[in-house]
Length: 312
Image 1 (spheres, helix red, strand yellow):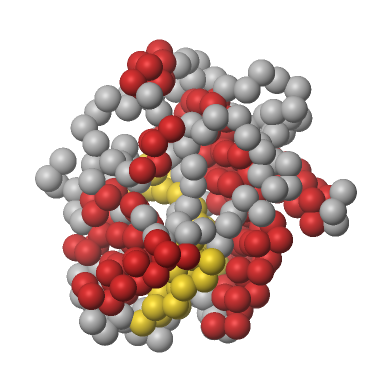
Image 2 (cartoon, helix red, strand yellow):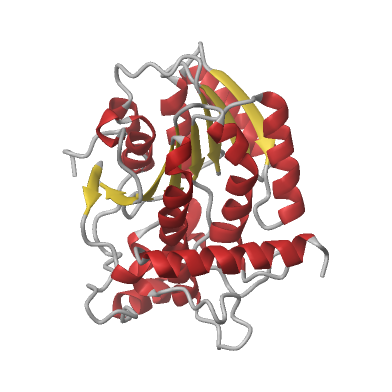
């Protein structure tokens, strides 16, 4: 898809000097490309990721690619709410304002596992970790006088709705494809409710499908998994099956849409939308855009995080 711009092409001519961008999962793949692109705009880019050595390497790479880059690094492990809280405090020690929060980090098709707080690994990492991080950073976003939250979702949301009666797979047989789809649906629903709650504070929220990108995210997938996924029937009969056999996009192209969501003037007065190929898409699964469903997910997420944070 040669017509798809790269992340660097998206920011050509964009000046974010004096602005602050936070990118989770910044040490690899899409996050790394997005962070480099944002650094070229003059923004102060705060790189957050779990692996300190990979973070340091990414920071050095960005400074090599963009000699004038202003960057900071913050360790962030989304599988621990205590760690999320510590990372939010560290970000708050670096800056008083955030203009772009890019919730980019994620896991995909992982074997069954639980986070430090007992959440199913994909729901806990992809949704709840970012849900709590975003909640803690809202004061800094509000202080920006105009901010954007960019949540990385995926067309994988078409695989499954999120079961709010059993979000952590305690009462069902685990299915890693359905669990991933649920977590990506949660990312969109989170976007819908975030935008509803925060738009009056000058904060808009966007959900992004980056494409089928060649990153280490698929490291848990075997050849049999790819075959199984092509046969997976979406939970909504009206949705097309997800085809992962399409040509893979490289990260520099895959990161274009999330960077576009962060900087484009086309989105200045828009929010609560699903983006792909640097455009607003009109065909996300209906359950992923349902405002009542989004509100209920918010309430369930708040309860789960509150219970986990209280140590019970």
